Image 1 (cartoon, one colour):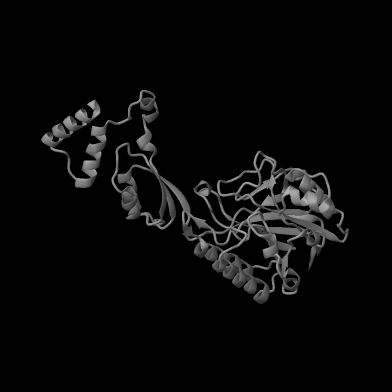
Image 2 (cartoon, rainbow, N blue to C red):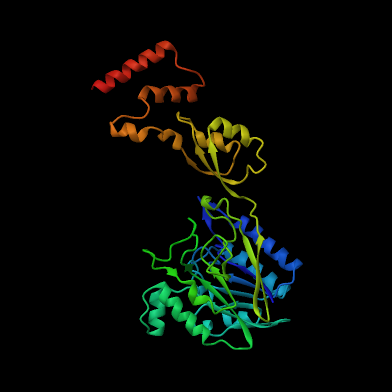
Length: 376
């Protein structure tokens, strides 16, 4: 049995008011091409298919086309659960009918206890989905004293394992924060104060656990308990993460291997650091100058229209930081003074605006004006 584990697509997401849907479509095409070229028994999506509970129409259309191709044309079943970004009821609409076409949406507690059983050369595999739910919903449904995510997942995991059959290998699909795993800036917190953490011990009885929510690919606790990571990079903090999906192999004895398959978006997210002049020179020959970029300017003098200058070589500069302008500010502010004088700042401004320096007479005149203003 071989299947693909992926999660956190966030279709319809925007980043600094820029739509990422075209990049997402390009990455989904890579998944499609992999399935077309390699034999897999299923595609598992561990939550956060969309970026919000009421997704934009364009994002729904992208998902619709993808599902039609994978399930309808390639005859590969898709098994998915809602994440904390998805609206479970909306995502699960018509799931009973869709199941006949190979799309299995496990969106409520009743579906959770009925696995999707797939046959393979190495035997039957039961896929159980644990849709994302707040502890309050679990407590209300089961009438149990559940107050944290950990207690909720312990209860749900026990209920699922009661449904195990000795004839099946068992896969769990869950969307949660396993304690000790590495988080990223682009994830929406599940709760405040650490009560969203879940122990991996609740999952050790499964043959594989396909996790979603955390955007960095990683394993936690055991080799077979894994996050596939997000579809693509969703924050500048993720610039060094290797995005992709996980190819999972099971045999008659259980877990065999999990292999990371790289996926690359057309626009990467990068942080570029340096002084303006150097960045402009290097940008002219940068083969990846179309990436989504955050620039940290190290210049310590004022620069007029820095975004306009930067976008002449990096069209997709989305954010600008100026840590160089803060050098010495904290010490000077403690003495109620600016790190640079008003005169220094105006000289920088004049140089940028006029592409020339103040004459001696202009400099003296402006110094006198500033001195008079400070005495008032």
